[in-house]
Length: 483
Ligand code: NDP
Ligand code: HEM
Image 1 (tube, protein in one colour):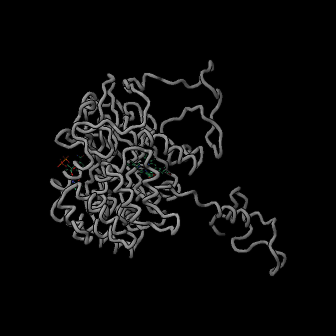
Image 2 (image 1 turned 90 degrees about the horizontal axis):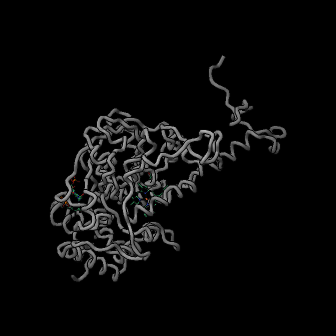
Image 3 (image 1 turned 135 degrees about the vertical axis):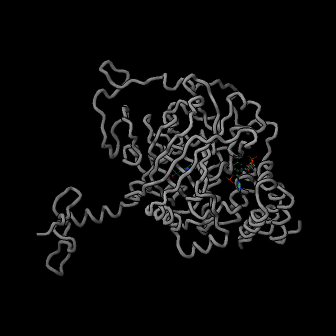
């Protein structure tokens, strides 16, 4: 007798046939009463959830964070206490392309981590760059539209991209990163990750610090040249997913060293750069990186849809000991992500195995589509019947004073704030001669697309000249624009 299980409908009823629909005679029409066929076709039509509006193409893996140093003087967050081990899931992604887009296209790479802590889930939803293109969430959807497809041709359009960038000088730092070979990483294992924003840490005594996360790849940085990245696109659109999956399957577990920069709370007021501006780094000479631990990726997902596609990261998932900073971009993101998940996955997305915390949930939220973890009574608070009660003491330390008029304005400029000073430092002090020559040729290649107009090319040259005259000159020469 066969040991194979019998196929069933999704209701568990044994299926009558894996091959034949119910028909009137062998050659006759099919019957509406064939529930098994109808269930199969109807479910297939609903297999896709909407892809992420950005960062649609990605892959991920499970791992573990280990804290090796004592940072209790800076934060009381349980996951960052010395000796602690916390399971995590990390999703890498590219930004602008759709679900089937090639992995090695020039783009920042998403670096989103969900830590399953004893105090609920903590998400750091960062990139492989320490900065971003813009500093106000008002501009985010416009920026993304300029990176995606035109309304008329449905094609991506470099003229549109340079139009946005050259009209938005705050993009200069991130576009410089993007146009170096770090815009075409050789694999996800060979990128750094950054929390990018400034976050608040507070310790058990309520003392506060501003911090930035740096996750340094232990594999070393490895990039493709523009030509190499293009050649890989022609061979394997899923190159990065395959690389990560294969490495982990073969026991070659990638790891990252976890570093933080810590700024005393009071320094923020007159630091030389506005420390909440996402287009700026904190130079290491001001705030050196401190190593606090390491994480390793050691387990591939069993099911791509359930673990990668349904994973839902949100910068608003902050645990006691960690709070948001007034970075306007972070503030916008606190709203945007859970809103996206409710649309993309559904109101109860946090009940799905990849998103639900390992720690118990005692929430008064209830019901909704696909609710499968349901609360018992009482269903309201406050109550006199022993239901869960909040503990304000857990968040003592997150408080700080703000005041001001309600306005729409740019950030207050600090002493050295300027859109070009930090990309200029990258060009002058950090990039090697090879990096510089690839930066120039990558820009020239990008701005040489047939749709980029002569007028736009002049603006492109001006953009790069503002960062450094040699860079501007190189771009002018390559584009054949008089400098
Ligand atoms: P440092 O010389 O102390 O640091 C330079 C940083 O640049 C290091 O983190 C280095 O780390 C990284 N780096 C090296 N090569 C490249 C590259 N080709 N592309 C991008 N980053 C690279 O100088 P500062 O801290 O004063 O920063 C100077 C400039 O370096 C900044 O204006 C910024 O553009 C860039 N930078 C600064 C960072 C920061 O947090 N301070 C972080 C990353 C870049 P690694 O090689 O390990 O990536
Ligand atoms: C994904 C919005 C800025 C990193 C997303 C998604 C939205 C979004 C709606 C899709 C979420 C989903 O469907 O699961 C925004 C807005 C921003 C912003 C409104 C600015 C105001 C940033 C910045 C970073 C970043 C600054 C990095 C520092 C990511 C990453 C993902 C993502 C890594 C993919 C997460 C995953 O792997 O599921 N963003 N974003 N975003 N964003 Fe942003």
